[in-house]
Image (cartoon, rainbow, N blue to C red; front, side, top):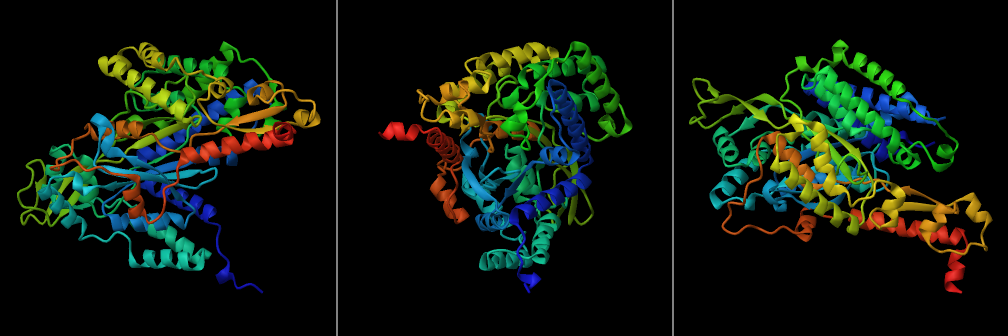
Length: 561
């Protein structure tokens, strides 16, 4: 009989548990987050209702909807390289590996004193953790010494957590008791907000110098979650709904935006869109659906239902403490289905206590008689949302970067346009992205995104008589089929834009005598392992699927004959 103590838990299942527990923790700490999840569930349900009207036969169970909506990515900020190494090993226990090196010190006016990676599963990830490391040599020698001295006095990773991490590495896994204990270490200690901080003088100086993100990392007791982002099926429906619930959009304006968004979605939600957004579907299932038309009156009724739902008491976010919603969404335009669109309600201002603080405190803080505790406020935790598109090739990414530069410049030239005239703002922002096709076949044809190809039954039956080796022509003829690869990673410029908006602060230049240069090799030394190149992963899957499709269709033999 097998000793149950030696039965190891599936790390991905425990990863799901970890993120579920973190979500519950964050919901208790931040009521706005809990309510935003409810708003997103309503929006995703509305999108599914529309999909069911468009594609007769489409269905999604409550469990599938919750799982898809519950994909999350979080963000944490780490202070010391040794802590970062431990966090790397912690996530490894949950089958999460570092993907990509993000140099946030080198994103122009939005630059921050951090470098980062994203921990996620290698295959079909559901959760991600964008994990930043403060680079103290970004500062002048005096500031650097003060920051490093303060960071040296804290111990975020407990001895128990280290023991469990090492046990996992030695044994090659953990049993249920140990894994649950490791989850609790994350939820109860490593990522938990305490509101306790130290050295108010340093905190104030860093904030005043433009380094709020450094103050957030250096002066607090733990690494707390900055956000925990859910997955939305339609960014524009969610953002309009949140602004309506928060009192930033009147009902008439909300109805107009919701109607426009759902009308657009009717045109965009083809079979490729279904495959991108719903992992429980495959080609065979989707091809069994019958297409139907959705009328303007159908959409009007859906908007009526949406308005009635969001007017229920539990969605009165206007009654919750909040700092408003971002004015615009980061990433590509709404009609360009690539990479990642991100938005957020702005960071909340929360009470904090600085213990053993410098007596020369900021006049805005309340200091007790002996100056051992300073009561102040801190703004860092916000409510991000994301909608994922297709992974771009290097050619596609280069085009995206050019389009984004133009779109950002157009937006910055008239910063209040989004509030004054939202349709005009959308048109202005979308125009630079016109070089991008708006459908998957066209994006693939131009080599701008990656796909996963496979042979169809029709193609296999025609083996030996197929005359073309053009993969796109094979798809058009029905001999092959393709699913666009979803982008599973991050966009540094968009992330920096979210940071800037939530911190009410743009980037700040290095104050070091010579601005340091950060490389992937240096970062990998801190991690203690290589960083996975996501683009190489996407490219490998794309190319391997074409080779396998050719083999199934008998085209490899023709090519080598």
